[in-house]
Image 1 (cartoon, rainbow over the protein chains, first blue to last red):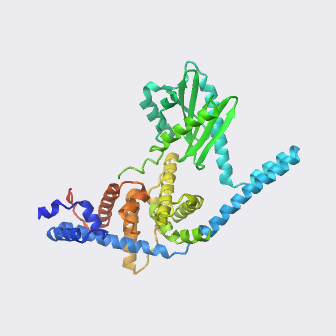
Image 2: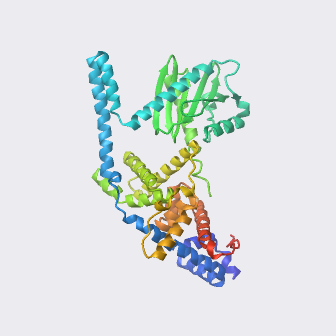
Image 3: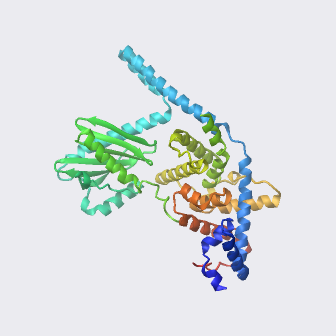
Amino acid sequence: MSSERADLDERDFQASLDGRLSPERAAAVEAYLAAHPDEKARYERDAELRRALRAAWAAELDEPVPSGLRVARLSAERRRRQYWQVGAIAAALVLFVLGGIGGWTARNAGLGLMSSTRSARAATEREITADALAAHRVFSVEVRHPVEVDAAQQAHLVQWLSRRLGHPLRVPDLNAAGFQLMGGRLLPSEDGPAAQFMYQNGNTRLTLYERADSAGETAFRYTEQNGIGLFYWSDQDFGYALAGKLGREQLLKIAELVYHQLSSEGAKPPTAGKAS
Amino acid sequence: MAIEAASIEAHIPGLRRFARALVRGDRERADDLVQDSLERALSRWHLRRPEGDLRSWLYTILYNRFLSEQHRQRRRGVHNSLNEAAESELPQVRGGQDQALEHRDLLRAFAALSAEQRSVLFLVGVEDLSYEEAARVLGVPIGTVMSRLSRGRERLRHFMNRDIDEPEPAPRRAK
């Protein structure tokens, strides 16, 4: 009987349970099980549980769908949100043009009409941008202690910051853009710990600021303040801000480099690729 | 809009069921997950490959939303234990008393599997997705789908047989 077993493996038994085996292999599985009563009993129990599981879940399909989950309703809400956004911005503009304090008040009122997710998105973005700029200004001019842990201990740096942020971090390699990693540090923020990595090319320093950002994904957003340019983006529940005294085009190229390195594999939820 | 509404609508009962299988029967959380996924599907409708299978696409979105939600909760230190899924939240079962009880036991055992095992057992065993489709939805290789399937079924059988005192199975069918 062992010859029958030799060309069967666990996948054949699973596929047989699911009725996804060719007739020849199904016959081989059947013959093997006929000769091995213990395994046959387990196989039949699995088949029985498979049928029972289908039956147990079957009732769920008959339940009426609540109105909040109807597509027509969701699409209408989407349209309304878009409409309100346009409306709110238009109203703000008109009133702003009317001028003065009246205009300012109306603008605030107009912003209030925007959906809460939109304003949460904007608030998170403002916060991360401001924090990243502040951290850049403070630490990029530091001569003796620009970083807490330097690049020589990169493995430790990554492990430490990943643990503190509760998220597997990776340090992008920016050598292609002429920037070498100096190291990184842990920073406090309104929404828990944040990390800052610093890079250097001659006298120019770049910082990459990262922290949790669950307000939704965004494309690159550019800001400039006192000669410091900054690109912000959010991806897979993490917000990133790359800042430096560079031209917009040059900074954008580096931001794209960072984005591609971070989103290639590590930005996926860590459980996704792991066998269990 | 009309075509998209009708074609997505047909999959909502299935999406709700998948969501419940993932969140272990917590209905409110499951429906939040479905709503979140539908909004995402509507906003990304233009990114869908027209020739691709709509059901797989929707299930993929839902599974990814589930993973990132779990990820967020872990970061916040929220732990969901099996016991949090209250008895009343497990799927309702129909049929005779005995059958209802057996289904209840089975769903409780199912809820005790890992999310990876539950999703594979559900997609393949209940939803009849092919192994390739399941692999695509879950974003893992087919080999991983197969091993999760095998281990998930083994564990489920184990949970269900505990009271009839099944001996520990000999390492079965080693490759």
